[in-house]
Length: 181
Picture 1 (cartoon, rainbow, N blue to C red):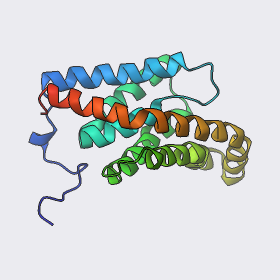
Picture 2: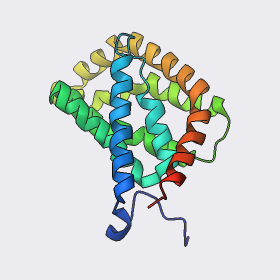
Picture 3: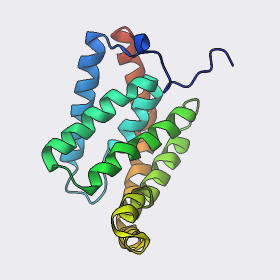
Picture 4: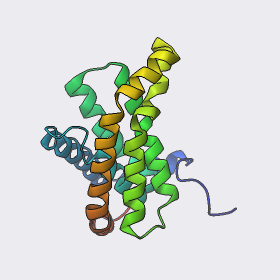
């Protein structure tokens, strides 16, 4: 299995970012946050899932930097609460799924991944509520959020269907242009 090592398991020397990467990842995390704020009037329709998938397929293990720059901005604006714990792991699930499917080229595949993630978002968050309030609380919280998960699914599906392939090409060119670290 030489050369097929997971991008998430790396040596310290390989984790170092160039100055250009640091700037790019900070800007991308900020742009993701800003794009979500611009779309805040739409219930559970946001570009974060699309961006997380793009980061994973374009940057591999370095996708963690723009993802957690975005998460940090969420924490700064909204403070820390139970949902904060969800944000520490939920984007990793989507990033790992996108990385595993990185060879996929058809927009419908990316739309399905993003839509399914939106549909399962509440269920993926429920374990935190199970730990803090018990399984009955977690299940009731999840079920009460299904209408929002349906909107999340639809929004994610449409955004990924329309934007994933063109944005992937743009992200690849941008990353090549700064000289991958």
